[in-house]
Image 1: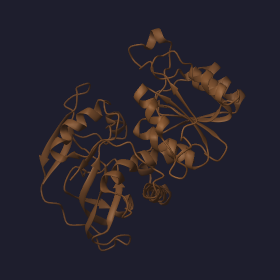
Image 2: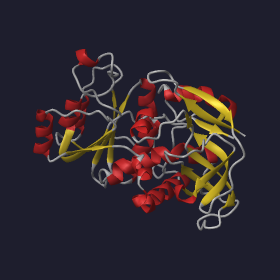
Image 3: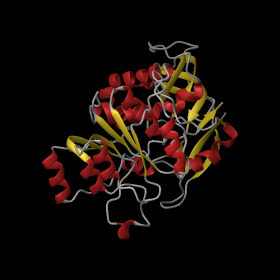
Image 4: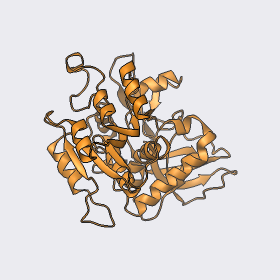
Length: 356
């Protein structure tokens, strides 16, 4: 059996992706589930995070969001039996590559896949679903009547976040990075009422002339938004940062300006720097900043029960058509190397899923 791994020869060099012939699987341990993989989604590999938590190695397994059929279970496995259809995310320290026909996974990283949900959709939605739940339910409390701003709403994560926020009764505003993205967001409809748009207002930032803060304050009658999910933020002036950050991203001051009283800013900007005036503005609003790192669920098993409930809820929403993911056409295994290179360079606008 072959499996896909990534290799980084030295810091700063581009990663190379290689198929390695792997030996036969070891015997199934007590809590392990042997799975025949049917689909595996591709996600960007954060080598810096892996290095910081001492998980960096010469060959890193590629592909962690998987769906498949149970072939065999360990003697202490209580949740699954052979022929069950399952979906899950392999942990950061997994030795297994999801891009392999048969793998071993601990039962606590898996949930059942509903019959109505296809393999590709299950694998392609599970990570973005976890990120959306982490942002909207655990780092903030989305509820009816709140206003949520989702930056880059046409991205795979943005699409699921919009659908979850609207399902919970929130009013959703989103930014679009191109005319195509704007048209996609304007076409989104909830499954219940196809006449009502999912997004109350789409702000097209592609030409750089629209002021996001001004648009959001106008939409909310000057009150500001309750929850902001960014897709990164500019930290400095245009002159300092023109080569470092895409100009489509809002400046951190704009995000703080458009936040309402008691608002929550959920950021993916791991190097966010707040100056004293920024902190003072947040203090005056009683607002908060939280960092979105969806890997925390598997870095400590203290929240394992909650994590499995999230996975089950994602599958239930996928089954009932509340979640409709932004997926590319399924990709055959022999094209996985090329697809992973595109994903690692952040050049894929839709979720890439390998189908076996």
